Length: 242
Image 1 (tube, rainbow, N blue to C red):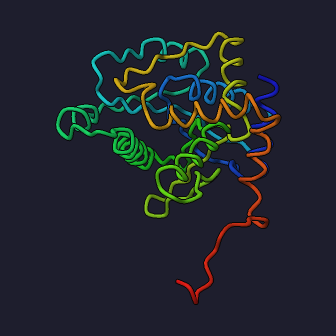
Image 2: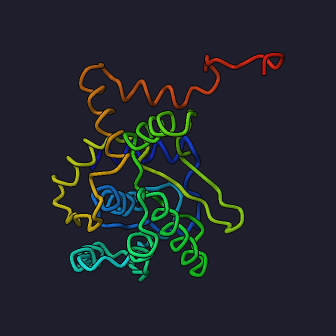
C-alpha cells in the first residue's frame, strides 16, 4: 500500500482534500475500489498532518443477494465504525421504473441517501473510490453520449447539504488498486447488481484499456490533459457565426 498511500497524500495536498477535525465517511460498496480506499485512509490516519475521523457507510439498494457479513467483519478488524442504510432503490429502479439505463438513477438515489445520512450524523465529507481510470472513462462517456468534455472533480462542495465530496484515489490506476487488494487480501464483495459489467461505463472502460495497451503512458498523459485547463485548443465558434 506504500505506493497508493503516497499518491493519496499527493492528491490530498494538491486539492486540499482533508483538514483538521474533518469527519469523513467513505461511501462503501464493498467493491475493490471502496475497500482499498477505506483501508488506505485508515492507514493514512496514522501519519496524516491533519487529524480526521473516519467511518464507512453502505447504502444497501435492496438486492436479495447482497451479503455484507464479510464487510462487517473486515471493518471491525480495522476499527472503522460502520453503518448500513437500508433502501428500496433496487425495487424502484428495476421493478417500478424499469429503467433501460438504470445506473444514472441508481447512482443519484444512492448518493442522495448517503448525503442525507451523513448530514444527520454531522459528517462534513464523503470520500468516494473513484480512481484515475474512472476519471478518464467518465471523460470519454461525456464525449460519446453528451457531446461535451467533462469529468468529475477531485473535490466537490454541495452547498445545499454543506457536504464536500472528495476522491483521494484520483492519481491511482485501477491496476494498482487490484494489485493492492490482492496483496493485502482484502475481502471484496461481488456486485449484486444485475447489470454489473454490462453498462456504458464498462464499454468506456474497455476502450480506455485498449488504448492504454497501444499508447505508451496513455493514462499519465490523460491525467496531465485533465489538469491542463490553460492549454485547451478546441473549435470555439466566433459569436458572429452562432
